[in-house]
Image (cartoon, rainbow, N blue to C red; front, side, top):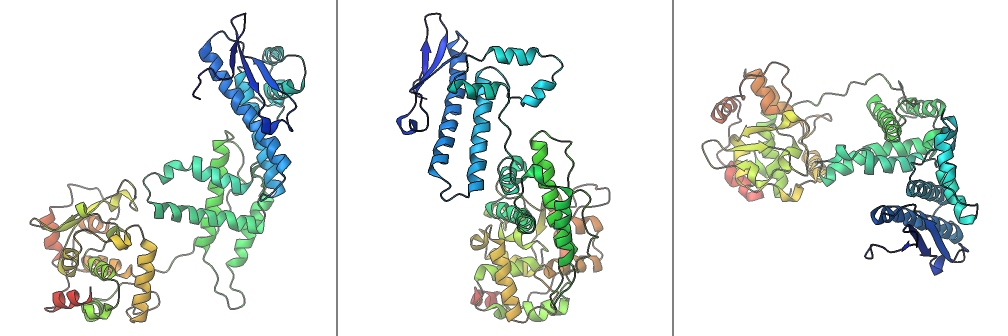
Length: 462
């Protein structure tokens, strides 16, 4: 507000008043010409603070009147009524604060053993006229707190409650995080309805649980879903319900989704690629002719590092060390991107075809930076059309499993294996996992021989 004393008037007794003309566009809704309210203070700083609350309260009040007159429009009638109820409640809270009180529901005021608080509030109210009716509602806590539907609670959860969960995530990671949780909300709304949060009962929760139970049973030759999908939905909506009411200060509210879950369904292990398969199929770059050059290099970078595709595709130039005695990759979190876990932070030596690939990508892979889904889709399609999967269960991750199996069979130290894979070491950890020279020497025990024509063949396809 440019004029610090806008809407303020100093009376003869030295006290400040809030004085404001009703804007012309709201005259048909509000019959007052001027608004005058005593601010009960001689301090201009206190007056300004209370003035700001009245300004916000009046703006909310006029907005609610205007939206009611405009009709539902693009909004549903239910959404409009919800919006008006929220404005009225928020305006009441601000009016109460402007009078020097915290908004307290009337039922709570009446339950106070000492009536002093209630009496002091009543004394601040002037004679009853239309403008003061809203003040009475605010000071005496008569405006009911509006219900929040599940869909609205989800937006509050994403924008206010779960902020700490999103810190450090990239835009793609944020979208993925939201997508999974939104699926649970949308499924519940489809089956049960977009209910008010305070109206969701155990019966509603069981209805959602029973719907998922039906999807876990094969019907009409349709493949049944796994319990993992069901438990993820139930877990996400249970967490949303709990954290929303904790955010509202109702930590003791019973969760209707409590103890509703299915026995865990063991996921199929992703099989590894056999050494012969890798050497006969992948070490001839011509097999990838026509595929994006960065995608080809990423495949070869995976083979001798065991890194996750997302770790490689999001490498930055400063974490690709090609100079020095031991070329290596520095797997690190970024300001705008998280790693899977703390154990994922590691340094991995470059050997064999992975070293050759990274020499051609010293600045990383900009085409796939924060575009993991694109990389996955491109590689899955390329591998299937080229018949590079030995079975339907094989995936791009099979390279990672092959890397781990080779280390195990070569007798590499357990702690080193955990470090290079980015896994949590379940044993006591001593030292830093060995020097980079030591790590490279150990990886050279399992490296696939680089074909003589590999460099020329790779150059021909990227």
